[in-house]
Amino acid sequence: MFVLPPPPRYPVGALPGQIGAGQLIETNNILTHPTGPEYQLVAGEGTYVLREDLHLATPPPHPSEAPIQNPNPLATTLPPPSAGSKLSLVVLAPRQPSYSRLYKLGTTNSTRSQVPQSIQESPHETNSQGSDAGSNNGNGVAPASFEGHPAPAFGQGNPSLAIVNGKDAKDPLKRRKPKSNIVKSNSSFVSRVIPHEAMSKRLQEHNPTGFYAFVNVNRAMQWLDLSSPIKEEHMTKILFTKAHAICHDINQVTKGPNHIDIVMGFSTGDIIWYEPMSQKYARINKNGAINRSAVIDIRWLPNSEHLFLAAHMDGSLIVYDKEKEDAPFVVEDHAADIAPQRNETKASLCVKKSVTSKNQKANPVSYWKVSNAKINAFAFSPDCQHIAVVSEDGSFRVIDFLKERLLHVFTSYYGGLMCVCWSPDGRYIVTGGQDDLVSIWSLADSQLVARCQGHSSWVTAVQFDPWRCDDRNYRIGSVGEDCRLLLWDFSVGMLHRPRAVRCSLSIDRWCFANINAGVCETAE
Image (cartoon, rainbow, N blue to C red; front, side):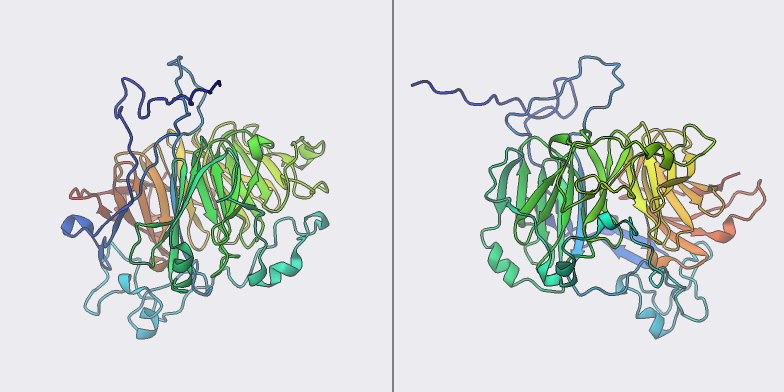
């Protein structure tokens, strides 16, 4: 009897001659409790302490996956990403008012009760001149937020986008779930699913006010229970065959004690809609039916239960519906008429399919060609009407996604931009990138207002701290490939000074026993 030979097992690790070549062995997750001054961050409002350090296991390459080798050392074509990691936290407590609104920290007990205990100021602490983000406003009242003025729904007015399961959407206990069981799936896309041996018992005993963590690491997706004393043991671990999970996002609208909607983007362009409680999943853009390039970033549309936006490696932004089937994409004839008329030829937004299209029986819902370079990240504005998009070519765009129009285009100092975020009031946008700078842009003035110098390598993530922001002062955190966490206190009063005056920026840095000063120069 003839027996087929086993599949080839390629050597794992880096290619010959590269740093890190060798055997990769997957280990279990490791949880440590570090102590010492090198794990403390002293800021104006107090001391932050790293209480737990969770090291996640990195799965080795699939045995049948051949290493990618490019014989041309001068090749400019970017290969698909082979690694990616992102962590998201989900709090299962009943939904409360969003913390995207601004808070002013005061000294009254009523004001202090709004602020997390970890960043509350002690009674004897005073606000320094350099760190005035926590200054008292005198009345202890939070400024107005966007919560009372919800933005129109994406595609509002198009009857073709009506929710099919409108009745089910009203009852959180009857959320629609994917159809296929990922544990019993025979798909070649999923290599292995490893649920916890006592998963059902852990779900029953789970604290309803606790929270979960979902993290994608290379070709693995892990579900962790951070409210459990055994945080390092996964609830479920999914290993994919050859596709690498690059990004994921959790729907904050549909989440509940018995339901969580997650979308994951992969290096092959595939997207998976996953519901961990029931272990059900559905595959979208299967085998690149709509777009074959990798999904770099993915997010649910604000206040939407079934629509999400995916940024592909070829510079496309595509809106998908998790409950619709795929169909081969064809550019619509009227797409050119919807593209905004602008003087800048490079700043155009090509709408290949509009949300107003009547052809909404299958995905995609909308298709926009933003750039010819890879999109590294995008972020929705607090008013849920705009998107900030940063690309590998150093371009930074602000798009009105409800009207599908490009509003502003900016460029970096040099190199690509890698991350972007909005201030809680939507007045400023912060970007970070390969120029090692944290750049602050004013949306009202349509210009760069400050560049913050402090990192010694690429800036990979930026974020505002809503608890340390008011109408004139902002707290920004940034993380770079130099393994440093920097905190910036940014004051609006620093912007309106003579051109020749340099303004110092208060900075606190968590860089593990290496503290230097940082300087912010007002843009001319």
